[in-house]
Length: 254
Image 1 (spheres, rainbow, N blue to C red):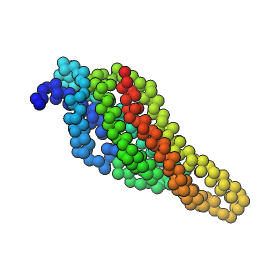
Image 2: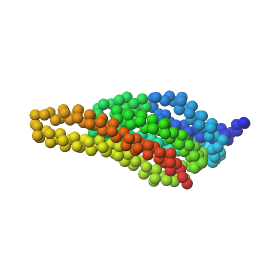
Image 3: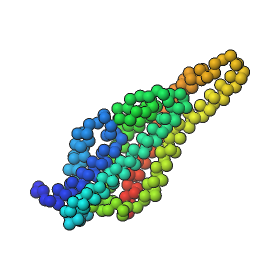
Image 4: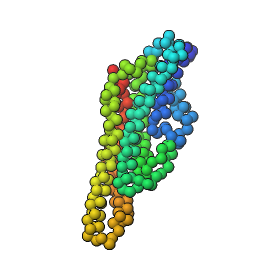
């Protein structure tokens, strides 16, 4: 196979989109995955996709320095937008984890997240749980398939301002708060119930230190509720992870 200048230019812009996508993916970010590994993944995917990717690059335009920068930035932005769509599920879990931690009294129990973001213990637990579901259910293959289809919907070199579905894409961001509240709703109800019970107990038995007792009761009840509602949490996570590959292409549909 003889590499021509057109192939090199096309491979460069494919690598821009692929590299931005892999940098933004939740399971390839942070300190746990070295940059060399992410770069290797991006290069391998670029080599595999190169023979099949349609190219609409204006070579006269990209021959200029400014044109090459604008085209590269266009591909980087597309890759980051698709990665952001996948990350929105994990942002929702982070919101749910923080709300749950506050409601059950673990908000100060901070854990070290090897992905580079310090967060509550519940947030880290939900993050890893979602990663396990992602890989065990084969959704990572669906995400990679959707990424490869993006080159058919938005060929290399096509300007980003021609895309459609921006309103739908922005509306999907509201799911961050919706999913976060749905997952943490049982714990909000639990906290309210405990507060009401302890308020009545404090009036009925003033000698009991209700404030100190509430910490142990809240944590114990929260752990029991979390263990009993794990299947419900799994259903929410799996549902929105299943929607992620389709949402990745939402703003690229013509």
